Length: 115
Image 1 (cartoon, rainbow, N blue to C red):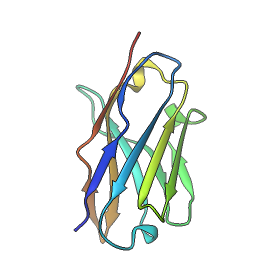
Image 2 (image 1 turned 45 degrees about the vertical axis):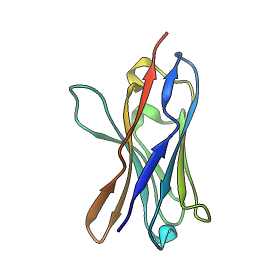
Image 3 (image 1 turned 90 degrees about the horizontal axis):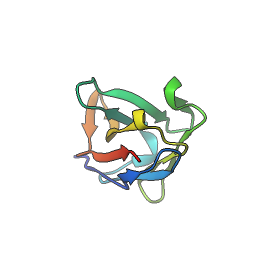
Image 4 (image 1 turned 90 degrees about the vertical axis):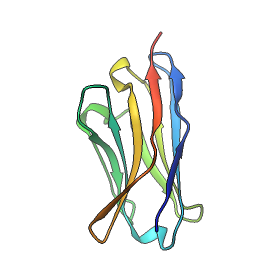
């Protein structure tokens, strides 16, 4: 059983920064990929960033150069550093991991970018 708990969302002005955290329970955190997704109202959930067990990262084109995903295997935690935030980044952000073909999701954390 894997549980994912996100934190760090909130209201921020355009151009500001936030850091999201996702704490995972269960075993063998370090050998599984982790990812952040987001879902804006009326839109489909989309991949924002992913990080492999070896630390290889990938990003959606819309966030490249602004967002950074990282992981701390000792703390069973994955982070999403978000800089230069834009109103279009407003969404619920979800932490994800896939194990044996099954997707696990956190409850989500709201990020609102507005002046």
